[in-house]
Image (cartoon, rainbow, N blue to C red; front, side, top):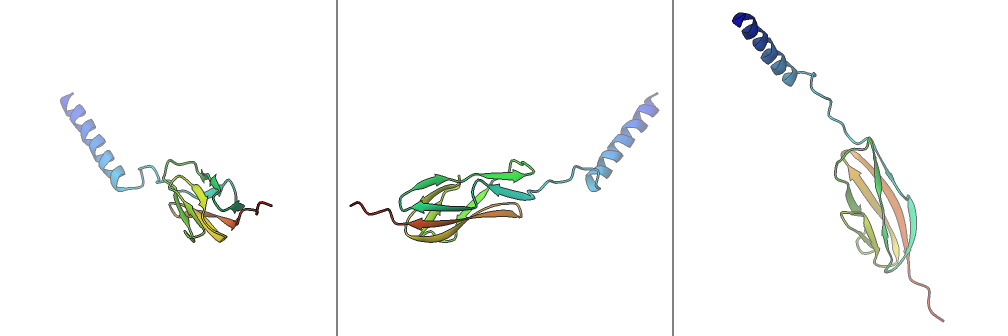
Length: 113
């Protein structure tokens, strides 16, 4: 009986080692697509908005936000956009190898009469 148990344990250990070196392990998932809550926006200097990103598949990975022109608008690590000056800039959200963009045009506030 001891010999059977020992053989059984040896087979289990060997099978575990084989699976660690082969494709027995789970496939690593990657973000395939990012969908933003907006693809194009108009803002006024001083305005603040929140962009959000939906990942496909829905994985718990960080989204990296960036602005193509920090002189026109800035974006935080949480996707909060602040309009700085008149112009157009692109906000990009990236995760793994996927990315999505939102084109934002910033205008001066209307003059008070």
